[in-house]
Image (cartoon, rainbow, N blue to C red):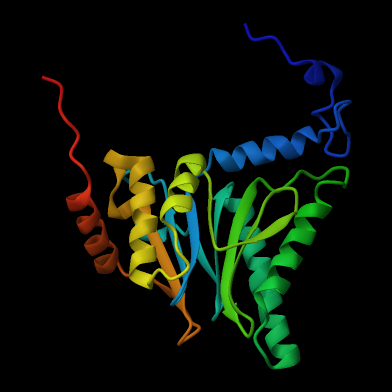
Length: 252
């Protein structure tokens, strides 16, 4: 039988507002662990705009794959994806969508990406120091194209956010991050970025790599409009990746 850790015996992991003696907020750390166990999501800035590629991780054959959302439109020019507890993500995305609509009505102009990120991050941070609440068990990749250019941000359960050129969250993060560091370039075309994201997912899920699990979206500099990849487009890219993947030697 596994023995409880000292901090569990003392109860430091029972309250979100209580630091452990070694300076840790354990409930927040548990939330970050939930994100690492979530399905993979990738975001990239390329020369043509923004690309999202994600694994929906559908394991029940009775589920309608097209009804499972893992990439959301926040505004015409902003999109987001997530890893962790997707019901938490849905609440945050709906808040972001409302914020974007209010800004458009009030100022008659589209909201900038950073304002959305700050609003979501502020709520996440508030939930780490308020009794009776729990931290959001989700990380978000929020990206879009505004007057300052293409921007990609990651925000985690602590409420902190960072801007990235390419980022990955969820299952397989270390392996995909290493791959992105080697193969990502800022001058990638949209098609090259999509293929890189799909190859990264293939590396993680391999034999379960099929259309029903994959979703993608992009925003171009020219149109500044969030667009989801169609089934035919994803299938074509996936077929190319399967053909180019090295064959594994079978044991005799």
